[in-house]
Length: 263
Image 1 (cartoon, one colour):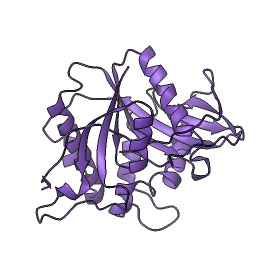
Image 2: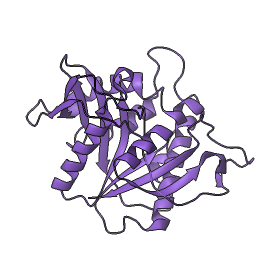
Image 3: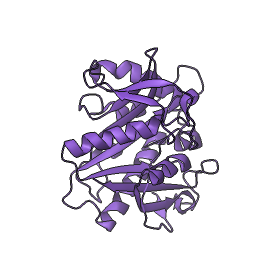
């Protein structure tokens, strides 16, 4: 069982930020319609064009293929516990299920698509379920011991948020996964995706955006976009029964942060 020796309250998530590239939102595009993270924080404008589309169930295979390449292996916690086995086509079924659950059919997830038709960025979102201190059944039933560790950490962030009382009686949209093609990082793709979902969330009556950042870079992006840090968990304080850290990501990823933005 995990122990937490010390954790400070504050807020966070993981994303890509920067200076604008030429971007458009395709409202009538084919309806292509949580854990977080792979972008750099510097900004540059290379004159590249892309547009943003809503993800739908027909895009599932394309989006999962993108995530296998750019998120599954890059995310700091995944790397720390070697969640993804070696091999070009290897994956984690439980992580794919986590990505798929509700994210492809709720018209709340987005993807950035280049002029050539390639996905260059993905933002998976979903409505936050009621929070509880009790461990959810899906964690207890998870058969993948490594992925179960990640689910438990995310639940620990939920419990920290409960203590803060930030979202009581509020309608909250969670930013669950943000990932950008390595060739497009630092060009504002994640920033554009988040700004678009913020616009959509306001239109649909959400009160807050929430993001859990397990990466240093994503937390910096949240801060740049005006998110407020509401909870912090140092990885060195999140330990097992032998007092050993469960996650030891490479520097600069030293903490998990939960961020919120009032809409």
